[in-house]
Length: 313
Image (tube, rainbow, N blue to C red; front, side, top):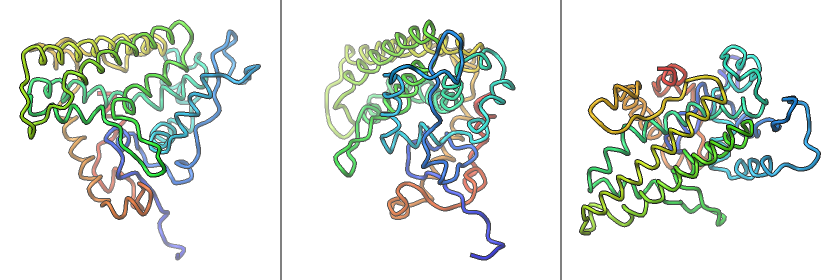
């Protein structure tokens, strides 16, 4: 390679929507291969340097999650590199309670806030409408399906990957009072999504199955319970960070989208650009590189909007 050759950049092209959208800007391969920094558990003196006297169950569970290849990449590396590389400075610049939180809580928040916000946008702008269209219930089923992988280890469902895992890790990293509230909210969300999954299971447009009004009502109830759980989680998260960056979801109605305060059109552009970016990789190249392809910067090559600006709308 000549001296004038541009540095090689890598990005994920075969992961799910929220995983790809968490790239801004693209991290290098060395960053992807490296797990996130050491954990700092909450303590009375709030010191990041204080080491626990015994192995922490929170730390070991987080490490176990990050050990799963398809999840670990998304949860430990596919994040805005400047924000993750300079946690203390970023925390001070953002403000709120971040400078007073443990390092692990700050890292988790900066790592997951954008992917989780995009997942919540999907919950509002797409999932809610699919419940009202029986032919779309097959697409709802896909959210709960686990995919098999080589070596016998299956990949988690999209619900687990884009909602439950981030919620779990954020809850584990926060101070005790907020952590307890977040974990309770997560349980409500999971219960609601489980009800939604059971109500729509096995119903697809290509399989003639009678869907009753009771089935539709159960699906709506599952969605509503999940919405309540998400809102409770967001409220607790905003309280812990002292910020109001994460938006709660208003109840369904003619003014819902206006009250939500986030743009459906911007979301649609983001989804479209991301799908185009995924398609450029191709299955052969994606398999060869293990889900990675050599290219320029993601935003330059695919036209994906700036994720920080998208998040802070």
